[in-house]
Length: 68
Image (cartoon, rainbow, N blue to C red; front, side, top):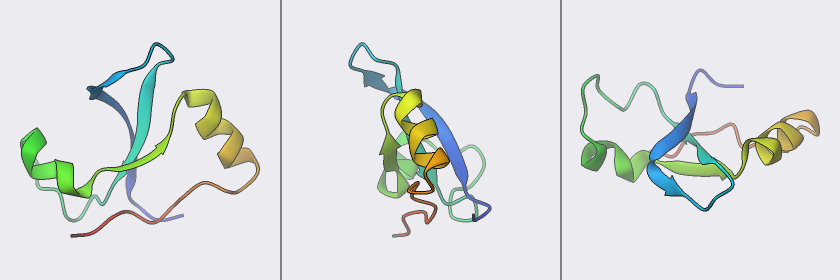
């Protein structure tokens, strides 16, 4: 696993099943960046949390962040 951050995307809306799990490259996104600044780095991993946990358990979880 890398040092990149998995996050609950509370800005992207939900489809009634919870927030999407996304991955961001921590070294590319500056502190205080706006949503528009970080959007190009956003990589959707799973929806909902149960899918994320299932992928984690079977080791099929994406662990490489998206770089510009």
